[in-house]
Length: 630
Image (cartoon, rainbow, N blue to C red):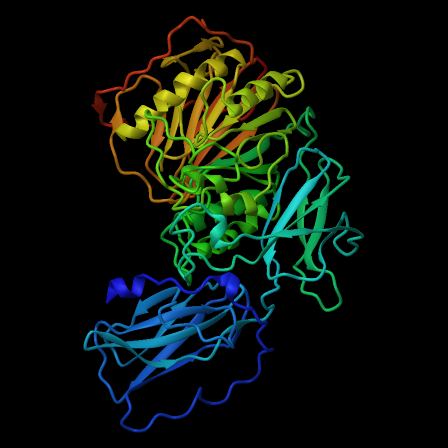
């Protein structure tokens, strides 16, 4: 029974279904449908409201008549695109056991507007079959299916632009209106829309059309706001600009500093940085994943609202939603991140759970040959469950100076950010490697002295996952020489669901230069610092650690990273632990970006074999309130 209630079955291809907009909500009758005869087993289901707003909770009550409950009775939850087309009972998107009682009230939510009406049906397990005893009225959203949701910003390749994306049902005039006065949004840009179908993806289960797998993702809109002034607050709203069309609330954002611009008022320019924010455990009807994904977003929003803060972007480094073929998880993720992503650029890189596939490679939007990258040194499988980057590439657009969402770069103030894919070929001579060399070579270190590299899988990690650790050595073998050649300051990664910070390290050797007796123990970095933050939402790891000399701090706790750039030579990284709602690890990175290592040194390429217990690691270095020049 439990297994039946978890697995939906495939229905007809959604391309063959005509979607009809449901009628406007009307006041319901006192009961739904005819009254049952006295001897007929039945369940009466009522809902606390038939009209709700995005993210509202909902109470669902039931009472049985002429039957006894069993421990296997359950309520199925249905997300119905068209109320006029009966949805089969086996197409539930969520479910809940009723607890072997004849009457109860359950709380569902927060409910996400996924362009459907909600309905609840009661099933009794009788003689090996599920018998439907009753169903609720439809629950609709006040704004309807055309409500613009899942709002997120991203930078383009042009510093004076900002892209905004959202999702809704198809509308007549998708538009962004914006300006510097929230009451006077005089500038407008028309949006373009796109979508995808099950057959656009590479393999099952992503290609399975069913309530719990592929369902219509709606229309994904994108518009670019142009001619923006750096470090200026703008206001905008999105939606259907036609008469009577549905539009959003007014959002705001502050444009990042222009490339090369110094910080103002001695305040740092800050970024959020993390990977693996999504959570495959999220249910279609809630609750929110507290202490993990939801708490990460809430704490980031708190940081943004802190007076004096200056967060200019969020850098989400792969493993985005963990949808893995389930459209409803993309909808849930979009709703969760909107409070942050609608007000700062939400910049993303690809991870294994968006991309890796083993068949259908001709549909891969990155243009990679074959069925993706599967070197013998790696453990690349079918971790996207057939999505092969298609939903990710549709739902996000990154700067057009690389290869779509797969690799790109952007500059803010004193920083240059380069995002590459650890899921594509990174060996010398490959297309991405060649692009990476050209991108690193093009950086003007007088203009943007800080050079940050992002990829999903780490080069340095000491967690005891043998196959992943072996792969990290292979990535390091191919890419670490470039880090030295172009003097990369920090390498950010995720993939492991944990936090780990290294010393400035090259070839497994810590490389620093003392700053003097008055430096409180701080030292100048003479190699890249590697920072792995993969514990923003997905299940935290629970393993031991290899004995390595370069680990400075590590935590097996949910949390996220904050990077603060103070000036051309001083930056500070902080790890915020969700449970503590506070910084539990911090490190200054001090560099004049003018260091070198012997390129003749051989790169270590052998798995560390010894293991050790993780020491009690707190603050990586002494935190100072005022940095000093190198």
